[in-house]
Image 1 (cartoon, rainbow, N blue to C red):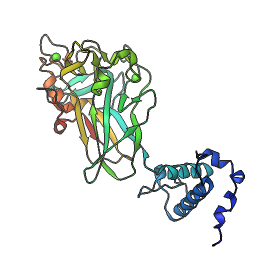
Image 2 (cartoon, rainbow, N blue to C red):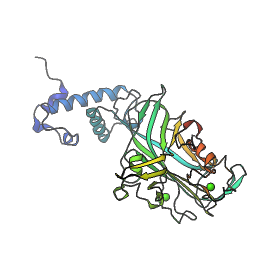
Image 3 (cartoon, rainbow, N blue to C red):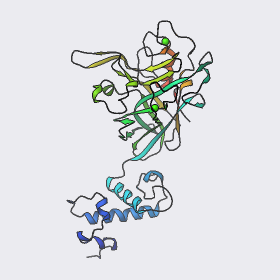
Image 4 (tube, rainbow, N blue to C red):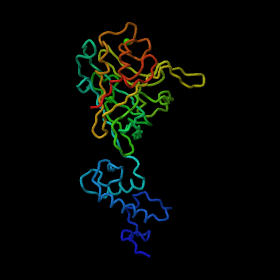
Length: 343
Ligand SMILES: [Ca+2]
Ligand SMILES: [Ca+2]
């Protein structure tokens, strides 16, 4: 019988397992817990000794590495995380999508006036800028979609839905606004090289028409609830003098006798972005691009100022096109959208 490798020596008796093992979520019922732990640590040490540090706890091949912060050293905390990752199979890595509220080439801020907006070079004083996105997917260079599983943070993200909030309640955003803002979407995805990102603008149908009393944050904001359609505003843009609104949401919604809701026009936008690197790219959400084909100084008589998704409001035609939605039937049309772009 060959001699036991030295790294197994300290695990020949359970009583000698160091306290660190309690942190590693080992299962008491495992027949050879110490051997499994030791082999994992040994494999991990061999791994980190031969691989360059990488961000996110994985290298380019998706293998666990210990030097998560890339400082050239492996701390005990990093060691524990990496071994836990190894035991879990190293399936997922954190991904954060960065967004930025923009008006043309200027950042959106409450209280600013923006010039040269739309076809008549109008002035715009926005007073709200919030939206819901869902169904996030990263795209490989080969065009394969990989789901981004969102972290459930109890505030901005719930299920596969996330909210972006670019307003901070500073005047003129003070009427309906909130002081908090959010410009990121964070989740987990398999390690890999991604060159694109796709998502939908709106609230998933089942969440859009749930019992509002059971709604979870970020679906608890009355400012985003659309009582006349029993759903949510997917996008809310308002202006200081109420000369223009963009309120996007499903329309033609009815509750049947059994309580089920149907909507004739979903009005969910589809966004497909290429030339995207999750580590470095920022996704601009550009109010000026959205309004670039609109005359913001003129409103169709007897309609809401701007566009509230009403099928009879022709002011919606250029806005829906730039949101990536066919105005004729409310179906998605990702090739037409220019509200989102990669910077
Ligand atoms: Ca806010
Ligand atoms: Ca209108």
